Amino acid sequence: MGADVLCEDGTWKLYAVDDNPTNSEYYGIDLPPGSTYEETRKAVLDATGWSFEEEFGWAKTDEKGDLIPGTDTEERLLTWLNSPVDRCDLETWGHRECGEYAPGF
Image (cartoon, rainbow, N blue to C red; front, side):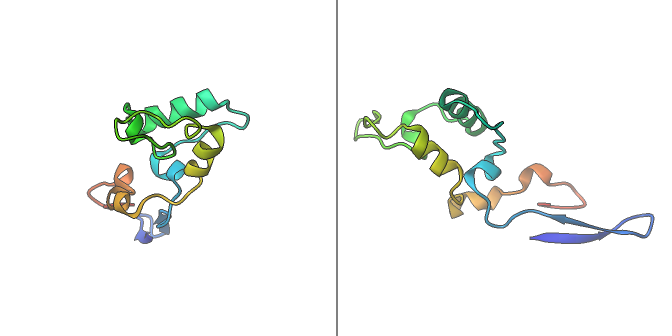
């Protein structure tokens, strides 16, 4: 989604955001190639603000909220990062770019 904007100098500029972002794009997680699992996990937790294991989108927890062994893995984390974001979260997609002249872009 996007908007064409007429600039003061008479030129046009396109502002756009992906309407189907991945979790990585949505949370603004940009990792350098070769990042370790620990670095990736820390970047995700820092970006999302998650601190409880039951919040982790890639891992599974039991009824007590404890991680189920084998579900907090690099493979699952990378799959989650590259998966489309949950549609419920898209209501705020682009809010970081909001302004009085370009709401949501």
